[in-house]
Length: 253
Image (tube, rainbow, N blue to C red; front, side, top):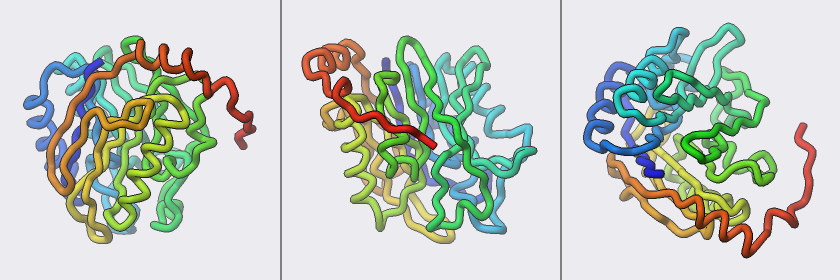
């Protein structure tokens, strides 16, 4: 499977500008099975009271459906969305047949006030795509290994983020740890640029189950990177070194 990770600078609270900009990025990187965008890719990290959030029906979701149909690939990323149940940091995984898988961010970033505007989701979501099983996660989720623990039910983690530069070392370390401990690929997509609160320097990377980088984007640069996922390699590695069989059992609440 070929994946493309899009490290973007996001226009603050301007979905139209961000979506127009993403169309060109997709057109410049044809032939992928999966394109992954950052967290809140239509608005930036919209936790401030005056920050825009989308309302249903979401323009961002409509764009994702059109892009998936045009490219014949799945499109993944999260959107700040006002729903009937309140605001959600909603991860959409959209397939070319217009089917949509939804994951609402479980761990809200209380240090940044996300819990004051958004409601947390409670369901761990795995979706299948072209023979692969993907666990959907958003930014702060990365710090909680029990939530992400592989129960031999997924092959890759997708983590989309607005992770600031001052905690970049944490991002790099946690992505690698999640890949190694779960014997899976990790697709980590962070943004670059600035919003009214933070500076972002990227760190977008595709890691293999050994924690080695397959592809990555240069720091502080708006760009894309692509790589191939090898399912047989994962299967052979897990059979040879069956770490997951010895894992502790935790009860999620």
